[in-house]
Length: 191
Image (tube, rainbow, N blue to C red):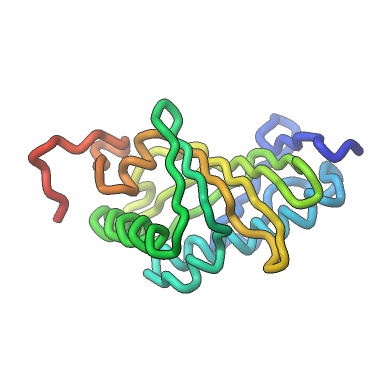
């Protein structure tokens, strides 16, 4: 199979599986994966589980270990930005944890939709992200893409692409109303 083959787990004949922290599943059937992508997908299942655990549990050291700096964050329909230092990553982490707490998010689940091996040491994973709270979904599901990079420390996150609403929400610049991300009014203060 070609190394750049995009595998689709969202098609009608291929079931989707959860890659969330409690699922133990990884999403793309083994018979559809090139060998390099299979190793990256196994790594993504661990990264996804640990990312959710770090964010929901407020564990910055675990969170830090999952990223390769600099990390590029791309907002669809918005300007990208980079986190180049551990201090910048920690500030971003604190904002995200605060947003999760305000909206009582207790779990984050990621369903793998596609996985593409870009090279021997780069892989793109597209997921549907579910932010879950005590009453079910905190917000409607949304797509997120992760670019994983492999170095001496193993596979780590080097890039994240997500909706403008999600990124703004994680930065404290949006709220959730009616299960949708909404811009925060200028005079609004999150509690």
